Length: 189
Image (tube, rainbow, N blue to C red; front, side, top):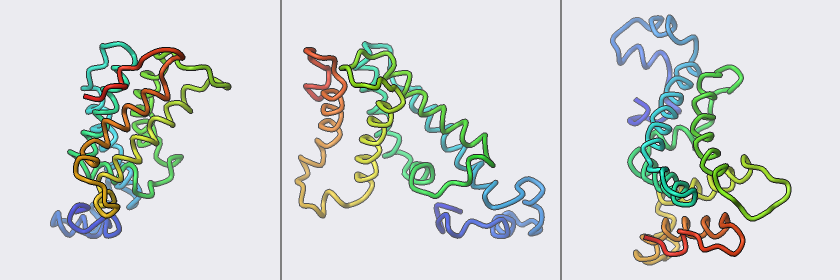
């Protein structure tokens, strides 16, 4: 239903109509629209985390983080609706929907764990969550842009558009590389 008509049209009454049940039936399972939306988004985060967990993170920390980043891009490309629901939709109040937030936090913790394994250049104060936020916001920004026609409208060539992910990953690698080291990101695949 969300794919067909958009999140704005989601209502328990419409869910009931499409299921062929009384308009009160969904309220036995979901007290409000926000409750059903929170459940849908929680399931999206479950799928997202499961997808990220398939990334090969067995290598050295920079390669493991790179694999996680590439998995993020692959998920955004393969699941655009779920991606938009998780990251480009006003979410229900997290305090009222702790299960949704627990699942969202788990996906973020996968990134934090990868960063915690790395030896980064000193930057005070040391903060794995802030470093994870840096990586996430960079990858999320490009993944969101790639879902639009922005790069084409800006006049970037197909080669530049095709190289955007590798370049993004290389720049993240440079930003996170330990001092005086060569990161695996310097030569994109």
